[in-house]
Amino acid sequence: MDLILWRHAEAETPEPGAPDLTRALTAKGKRHAGRVGAWLHRQLPDDVRVLSSPATRCVQTVEALGRNYKRLDALGTDSSAEAILDACGWPEHRQPALIVGHQPLLGQVVSLVLCGGKQDWRIRKAGVFWISTKGSEGLPYLKLVVGPDFIGQLR
Image 1: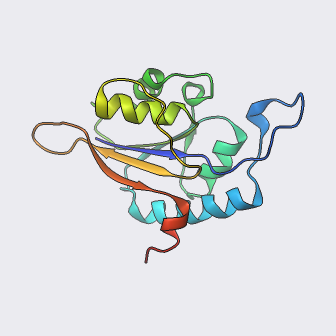
Image 2 (image 1 turned 45 degrees about the horizontal axis):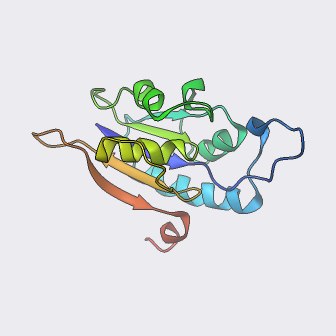
C-alpha cells in the first residue's frame, strides 16, 4: 500500500475568537496548493483514495488536486496518528491513500510508520511524504519527500 501524506498549504492567521477549522489559505498557500496539486495529480495512481480533514485550509488544498475526495473527521486537528492510520486502512488496504491533514499529526504518522513510535517530525506546509510497502516483505520505506518550492523546479 502507498500512503501519501500532504500537509495543507499556508493558511491565514486565525482571527481572535474565530474557529480554527475556518482558516482559509493565503494567496501563497493557494499558489503552493495549486503547484503541488497539479504535480501530484500526474504522479498518483488512478485508484488512489483521497481523504481530507474537514478544515477549510485542508479542503482548499485538496481541491487543487482536481480529484474526488472524502472529508473525514478522523483527520481533523484533534485526531491522533493511530486514528489517521485506521481511517485509511494502513497497511492492509488494497488501494493507496492520499491524506490531506495537519501538523504535528502527519509528522507523527510518518514517524510511527517508519520507526514504530510517535515523534513530532516536521512536514513543511504543502509538503508531501510518500511511504510505500511494496515488496515481498511488506516493510514500509520512504519513497519521496518533497515541498512546493522543489516541485516548481521539476519538469
